[in-house]
Image 1: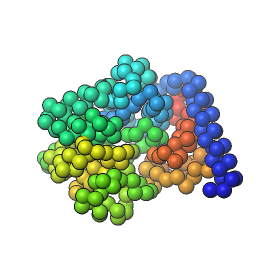
Image 2 (image 1 turned 90 degrees about the horizontal axis):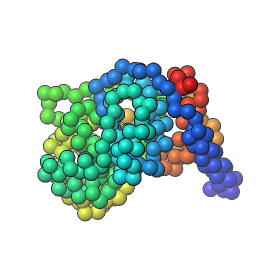
Image 3 (image 1 turned 30 degrees about the vertical axis):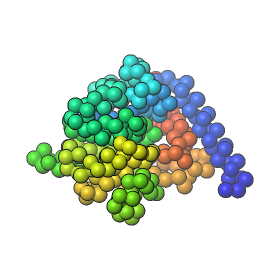
Image 4 (image 1 turned 180 degrees about the vertical axis):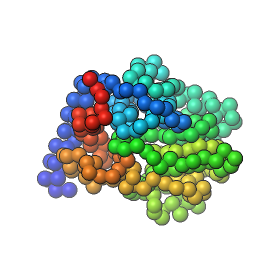
Length: 298
């Protein structure tokens, strides 16, 4: 990267910080109630991500005609009461729990490798939360660094007469897996399409249908930021189901030098603002808040 590019990316990052400060000073939007849908949207949040969660859910409420139930799991840095106070504006059904509640659920089911993975890793807790809620009904995991531009219409249908779970994940622009797991006969994951788990639909018992116990035992001993993503990519490859393309759930970093929003005029349903462009989340969130015709904030 040349000096001009370095200066530009510094400017873009600082503009993101400025947009975040402006957003933090805006009044909480007031949304008219919307019809509910038979879907639970879950996410995990802590003190460092509460701002992301707010903007993510604001954008979802603006862009969806029906809203899901919302369940937020605390990562331990916020109390359940903190989360409740942060989402008083959400008029739909909502509930909250602590990550230790998720671990307790799987401990009661005798899943000790999963329990150890979750105790050792925040991504293990994410994986455990997805599995728990999917066993109870249609579940959409949404990372907090996702903004919504349109309604998500491509949700799969679960056959209650089948023991096969339904899993749908999003395409990634690059390979981001746990090499320690890949080395255990998972070399096929080197072949695109690659997947990330910023957005995951799951319904049914994944552990019962996909043989990942051996991999979970490995994850319980050592894991990294991509272990959970690798486990779900393995399960997806074994189920052979549908996925969201990176044109539908945008995921890329080619616009990291852009000062202007790049979602305008695009057909994206949502965008996952992965690490290299996370600062752009705040720019786009501010534009959505200020200019969206659906925003009924006073």
